[in-house]
Image (cartoon, rainbow, N blue to C red; front, side, top):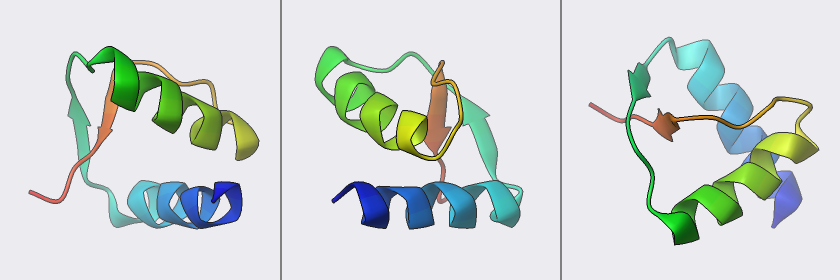
Length: 50
């Protein structure tokens, strides 16, 4: 799971699609763990597809 998350983080970072939002607790914890695994500090960042 963490490996897939890391790939998603990198793809998102490289895509240049950035949106700052308030995350709900569940997503925040899951994404936070994924983000931390990729060496980034998780904040109010969302995987934007828009």
